[in-house]
Image 1 (cartoon, rainbow, N blue to C red):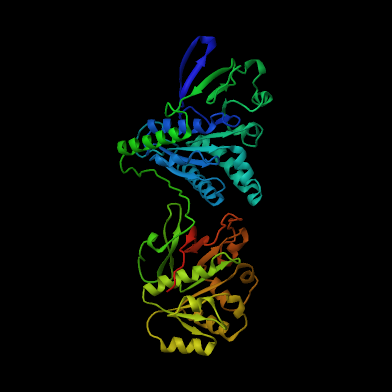
Image 2: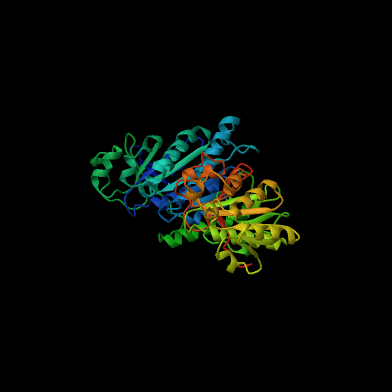
Length: 472
């Protein structure tokens, strides 16, 4: 990754990183010191030396300079700045993999044997930005989880490379980072935090040149991916390398652990068709951002919950569109005017229990009952009728309401719907999982933005971005 200058031996030699013997690495430096460029060089060098089956790369791109790492076939996820939801999923995926290796005693490969677990490389650029973004989130839970991953991962095939300013040298994770490379700092006093005496600081310091605070002190210069130091040239070089590596290792998926960022907008053309009747494609989600279906083939009732402006009505419309595509007749149960009625002109509307019963008795074929703002039906005749319909399980019923209101309701159709433990929690908070039988849910303010939520069914919880609703 660079050239190591050893004055007391009067020689220079390549500075290389051997994952077998290396530990976690700290790269501290001030602004424009070459921190991001050094991380790109490390990633490129490791990717060039290891096949995708031997190496998987994850990155927290808090500076916005590591996005091009996705060009590498080894890359399973680059977390954009301030994307707390994606950050949480990457840390969870790493934690699960480390736990699997601990249980099965499957550390990372020491050679090229087939079936060995791949090395996991975690790059974190700009520690100070990462800490500022997530320190207050869930009372610092993400930072604690990162520390746990670093602490447990060293003996299980994970190697972390963390860059930051002087605050990294005084951080809670500094003791977990073994090798230290000190790039140009903003002021001379900062070198003292790394244990470097003023006399050992070079008179002239250029970006990418690092001090190794050993005894005696030596320096190294990080290599660049292109002779042109401009960031655009370095990114272009990484893209070219990615193309070369994909040709060298075509269609390599063994060992891949993709954790992709969820899109902010999902349109119908982005979803795959339904796999079977009453499996409703409603959005993209999961670690591989694939089409997710709400399964009402056996469980006939689902609950949609979220705070105001979280996308509850749009979620209902997306489900209605998917059901209508499968030939279902739509019935809207509402005591008054509803936005659903105008958005679903082909749907029938029941204003009271008698009309609802009449529609169910006269309409033929599969039917879905939709209710928005279900909390407004509390203790009404429609509420009682819906409770009976849900208990019989002959028709599909989807109820939507405010999270706080639903948590405070202890009788009626919403209680019956909660027993199915199936639905979508939008803008979920830590305690919202109680609605659908997930008391340990730890979303904690991560799932922000309209249509961003959690699909809960079959005992699993999956992050998703809901389909942008279309009129049916």
